[in-house]
Image (cartoon, rainbow over all chains, first blue to last red; front, top):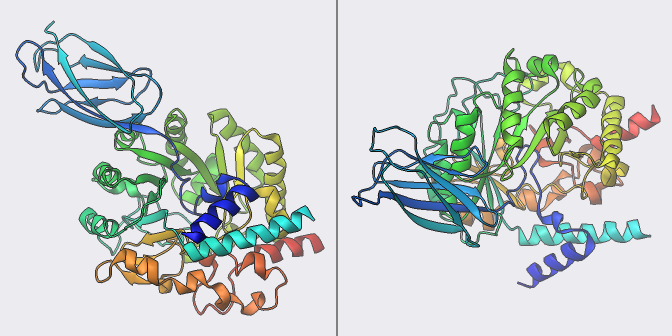
Length: 121
Length: 354
């Protein structure tokens, strides 16, 4: 404990916090970024049944994930204030036809769960 | 005077870091299969490795022994080429489930848009691609005529993700040393924010090719180039942590030389060996996850890494810079360990003397 205290003091006072953030010669930089684990389930508003194949994507980002046969999805996305997510039926009528829905997540936690109901087209 | 105080405090800092030896950076050599056959490979990886990829469950069992995980504990997937593993996404998600971050070193050959999205979805937070020159020199070193085109596309994908702490690394050699300014411009144009430069360690396949190693003068020119470009503040360019560079220390890096192998950096190698950076001589392995408790080994062994007095031999024996260098990077001690493979400081001094 004493050593940790000294470690933080010397590291903090002498140079910068970057002393603790390094990259090994043949490694990557440390991951010091922020992200959120967004998980959820997408169901039909009419039947209450989970919907497979719905594309879930943050606004203005190439990231995307698709719901599985139980309507579940899960992905890590860049943490910023007010995460915009779009839920979109992109497989035509293969799993039914549903209207696109947008939602904004205001979260400051590292993990969030969302329940989404989609209207029929 | 200020420099002397800084030097003294930094030495003390290194001493405390060594005593605390907090593990916060763990390499996982998840495969030794590779889709390239690079001229400089220190691991002698091959398309058909003699080792099977380590099963994820085996690695996770070792990871689960870690009792104390600092906030930015990062698991670095390395190889071989990690993208050859079909379960790379699952590997990442399982690491994140345990409250750790993960990152990857890749040659970029298999890194396309679909892969990029999959890995981001799985919580990848940092990424490094190797770029060893412009098209001709990169393809020469990588021994593959499509390698540059592939990594060029991979870099485009990585730079457009604000989530990723991304950098490019370059092994400087006789063929690409003169094109460093052009590579610099290329990276700036691509929107890359961080660039690390290495020299090549004379191990593995690299020992067979004299073109891979810089002369003393070329090495000095490389550091001069880094020092000059850092003044422009356009790109976070730095010399890697591979070795002590004397008077250049404050000019080419953010902080002084500190080989953290076995102090903050550990590894689980392809055969289960417990060590530090994967390019360190395998005889330094401290245990094996298939018979030892990984974290117990980390906490109680690693004497050779945490007390480097044994490196006071050969040309290090009477060196006046030993207190700051402590035998250079651990990966420069191979074979009989009677002498350091490369002394960057001597190379620079010899270059200055002509």
